[in-house]
Length: 166
Image (cartoon, rainbow, N blue to C red; front, side, top):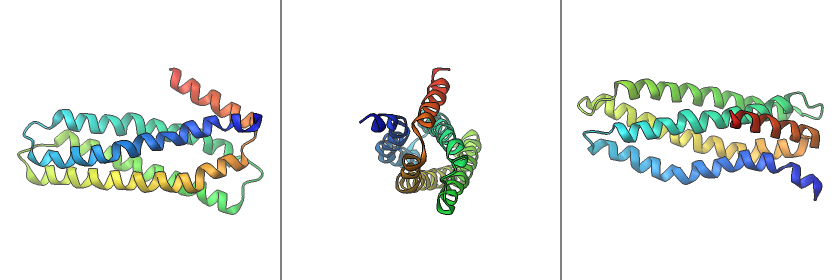
């Protein structure tokens, strides 16, 4: 019972995926709705704020898990490959979020190609993040549960709580 309690921090981070999945359909509808809106800025701002704040902060929490796993003596070659895949995808997704921010700055309902570019990039980002979350749920979080010790889980909890309290 005591050991399971330590995994609460891993579950807390992983459960943020559920939060994202719940918003997935909402974001798809919101993005599709941009085609018909003359004043879409509120929706674009809400969409970008979610990705800039929630998703990027989530990546920071996962980076704390990665730091601990990377120094774990029990890490196998497959575990290292999983960590590298997560890091590579985080880097790619972060770049795509920044790219979407750039398109969002020049978004104009009057410029159809910019509007369509934003919508296409937003849909692609939504799909990529959904696939990324599924991969982490299948590979990354089980690895963390398998390898992290109780003191490491406590260290992770303190690091994540410290970031979120600031």
